[in-house]
Length: 179
Image (spheres, rainbow, N blue to C red):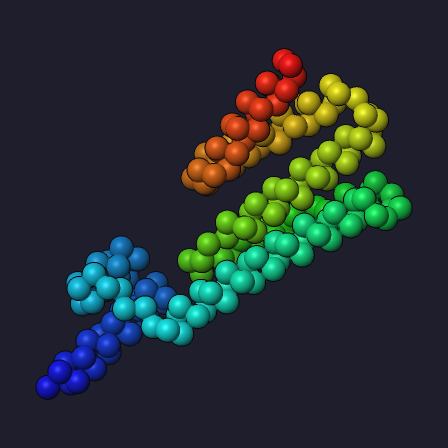
């Protein structure tokens, strides 16, 4: 009797997952129904868990590769500043696009956005050094603008870690300037 009951329950839960994935019902309705039928468990299938783990692994790998290649392009090549900027901008665009895709698939794009922000910071510092030399004033303005962009992105997309990072960076920069 229990196996029939469990198989019915699994069938209903699978159907609700399909509805959620196909956007047949609003997400909060599906979450409510899943919580109701699974008694708060959520009953994620092992293949769904492994898919999320694989996605997170890809997330880490994309981020690390993009940062390493960006560092290589900036510090170990003799490319012109225009070519370096183009390559780094394409990395940032690619990482943001992958992040948007991850959001649509309801996966966490945290590391992709952090990698894009780091690459953007590296590129802006490289451009500032190329245009103004090692001018402290130009570097401070560039770093403040990056902090402002991080705060703005955090507020716009409700990413607290970006807002916090931008705020902490701005405060540390002010302390560094004053000392």
